[in-house]
Image 1 (spheres, one colour):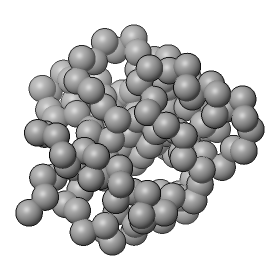
Image 2 (tube, one colour; image 1 turned 90 degrees about the vertical axis):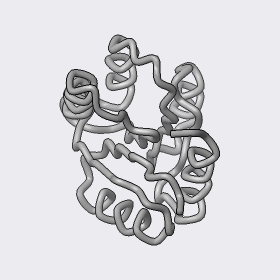
Image 3 (tube, rainbow, N blue to C red; image 1 turned 30 degrees about the horizontal axis):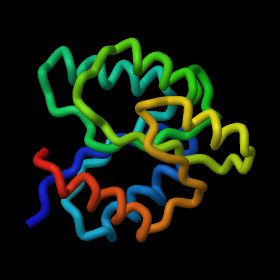
Image 4 (tube, rainbow, N blue to C red; image 1 turned 180 degrees about the horizontal axis):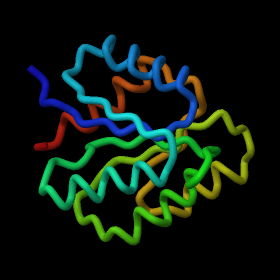
Length: 135
């Protein structure tokens, strides 16, 4: 039995969230997925978890282009939270701009850039990376 993985998806596209949820179900991993439709809602969610001393996400997938607080603004706000727990974060975007890929590399919290759509194979790789560590 795999350790339960907490996944936070930050994306304003309901169809994308639905697809990711279906992919999560097909991975065979026990995973709890929470979706927030903008960076501001995601920051509030993380603050609630911290305040209630609850388990933080093990993996965060972040879209770049969103209303209220976009992916980059979320990362800036996240860094101000001062979270010491290591969380694997990946930009998940339909952007094909090289400058977005390069910008993602400037954030120490971002482990990589994944082009949409997310594949089941790629998500399994991400989950397996988290599963090798004590959670």
